[in-house]
Image (cartoon, rainbow, N blue to C red; front, top):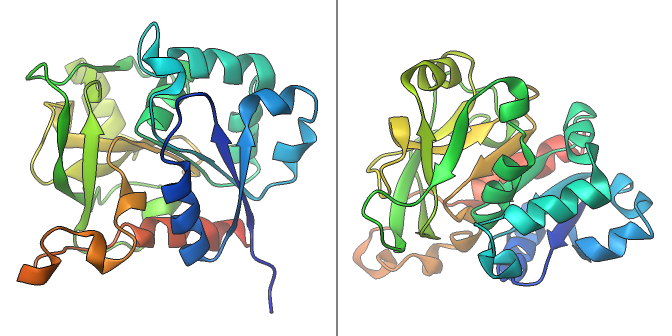
Length: 244
C-alpha cells in the first residue's frame, strides 16, 4: 500500500473548522496532523516534512484588527515565505474562509502584482447559506483539476467579497488565477469569484467550505434529492497531487 500523504492543518486561537478539514483529508486519503502555528517557532521542520498544507476556517484571534490579519502576521513571523516556497516545491496548499483571508493578508496575490482585497459582504451582514461553485475553464489550479459540474458547499462569513478594479479583474481571469466562481453570488464578489489560485496552481484560497460537504448526508436537501457535487473532490485532487 502506498504511503498516505501527510497534511499539516495549521491552527491559531479561534480556528474552529480544523476537525472538518481533518475529516475531509482523511476521506480523501491523507493523514492530517493538526499543528498550532505557535509551535512552529521551535520546530519549523515539522512543516517542511508535510506533503500538503491546510489553513482552515474560523475566527483566528477573534478577527481582531480585521479578518485573518493577526494570523497572517503570526504566519509571516514564524514562516516567512515558507508557504510560497512550499507551493513552488509542488506541495498543495489550501486556505479556506478565514484561511483564505489569511493568505490574502499575507500578500500571496499582491506580491504577484494583483491589487485586490477581501471586503465586507455587499449587504453588510454575515452570510450563512449553501452555494454552488463551478471551476473557471481557464484555471491552472490543481485543486480543481478535472472537476466537472457544480460543487455544493456552505459559505459562512461577513468579510469575503473580492474587491478589485476592472483591470485586476480582467488580469485575474486572463491569467488563470480564478479557480472557482459562484453560480449565484452570495456576497457581491467581483466577477462572482469564490476562489483564487497563484502562479504555481498549487495554492487555492476560497471563501466557501468544501470540507463541510464531503458526505452526501451533510447537504440539507439530500432527502429531497437535492445535493450537488461533493466538496470532497477538491480535497481528493489536492491529496492526489501531494502523493506524486
